[in-house]
Length: 347
Image 1 (cartoon, one colour):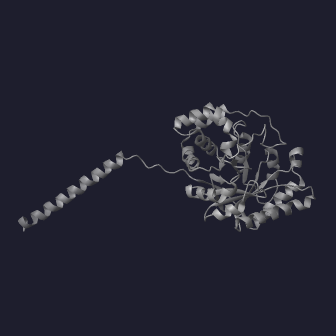
Image 2 (cartoon, rainbow, N blue to C red; image 1 turned 90 degrees about the horizontal axis):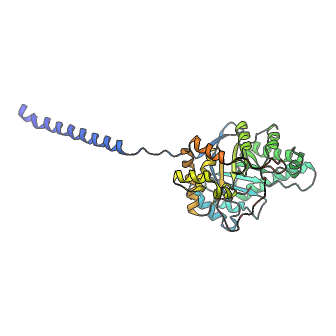
C-alpha cells in the first residue's frame, strides 16, 4: 500500500507547489501593477423641498446658440458622457427647447430657465406670466417635470432700486408653486446680485438651491457669490465659463503654468479649477475634442491641491467695483465671435 500511495502523494505535492508558485506570481504582478484610478464623483447632491437628494451633474451641457444643430449636438454630448442639459424658454434666437426635447434620454438632469421680461402691466400678472412660460417650456421639451427651473432676472426696477419689486416676488412665487406641484425637483435663479439674492432667500416657501451667473476671473471668480452660496447651501453655476474667461486664458500666467504643470490644456484647467471651487460648469462645446476636454476636467479637479487653487486666486483679484444695478455683469460686455460654439453657455 505504501508503494502504491507514493505516486499519489507526490502528485498532490506537485499540485500544491504549482499553486504556490502561481499565487506568488500573481501577487508579484499585482504589486507591480499601478493602482486603478477611481473616477471622481460626477454629481453633487442637493436637498429638495420634499427631503430627497437631487443629483446635479458637475458638468451641464449648454444649448445656447446651437440653432439648427441643437438636437445633434445635445445627442453627441449625452453620448460623450454629459448627464445634464441647460435650456431656456422664450428666447427663440438663442434656445430651442423642442430640439432639446428630441435628444433627451432617460436619467439626464434637465434645467429650464424662464425668461423674466415684465411687460409694464400690473404686478399681479408677473407670476402668471412666469407660470405660463414654465408650462409652455415643459410642453416644448415634451416632459412633465424637470430637474430644475431657474428664474432669469431680476427686474430692471430691482437692479435700479437695489430691492426686489413686487413683480420679482410674484415671479418667484410662481416657481415655488411649480415646485409644490411637482414640476421641478429644484428651483433657482440666474444673475442675481448678492444683495437681491439675500432678500430672495428671506422669503418663505421652497428655497432657492441654484444660482447661475457668469463666473469671471477679473471678479476673483465671483468670491462674493461663492461665499453666499456656501452660506445658504446653494449650488453656484458658471454659464459660458470658457468663452467668458477667454481674456484670462490668453493672459493668465497662473492658469497657463498650472496647465503646463498638469500636462493639459488651459481650457480644461479652467473648468477643473472652477469645479474645485465648488462651481458647476455649464459648458456647450461643439467638437468631440472639446467635449472630451470638458469631461476630463472632472478627474483633473480631484487632483488639484489647495496651493494650486490659492495660486490662481491670488493671480486674479477682483478688478471691478461692485455695481448692484448690473449684478455680476460688470465691466464692458464683449461680443462673442460669430460661429464659435466653444463653451457657449448663455444666461
